[in-house]
Length: 373
Image (cartoon, helix red, strand yellow):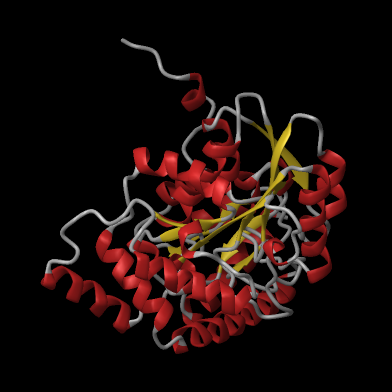
């Protein structure tokens, strides 16, 4: 039998998936990072129209259709106030591919990539697949990313650092002051800041800011996606943008790995970006209401949890055995260590599910907490 690459042997199946497989079919799933809203009707219809007219039958440009890239550029001009050229946007197969091409284009074998710990599971794995070395950076007690800790971890081998706000798995939102610091660090240390902003619209307290708003050099690359913004996870449509030279290198990876994003998904995403965004406000209000239900429930149970200011995750501190006790009782939560060593002693709870299930799950978590104490 042939052997396998060292890169693939360095990674394993996500700990999130392991938890799902251990749960029963009728379990309440608080482990899934997916909005429970339908894709906007006008986005669905745009895909149908493209399919029925034959527009979706052929490859699009490698970067994506010009109309989609212009819609993305308009969105970021309006939301971040940046002068984004549509030629510097690549439509990708979800935010996951955007992260992948960004790291492949910028990381050499042995290069260090600073990642938040706890942080999204893909940061570690995709760095290793690119041949790099992930360097976990512990978060503050409130689970925000500390610019000072990032700066202190930079060495001559650092190629990039990853920031994520609103954050997965934490629900934390970086302040404007911190985001300005991320931009300064990228400028002064001449390292890439890879900013994962896929939860951009789901902010309850404060405002979303991007390092690209404040950077004075071209050392910021931004990843975003229709998945969480418009409840389009299954469509697999994301994008990545940055300076022309960076986009040209990322395109080299994208064109061989993917050729182009799915054509029907591109037409759907364009419609979502240009159409009525009432669903965005509706989702945000609903997730904020559910967050408050979860925090109130945690307080009654006795679980300490930093207040999530965005996304739809909470990360309470839990006793040893809590996750297993929840699983045994039919509630799926994800152990914090699935997101890094510093996630130990926490659990990630997704509240992107209906309120009745949340309340039932909280009752179960109360039992699990008593059993694990």
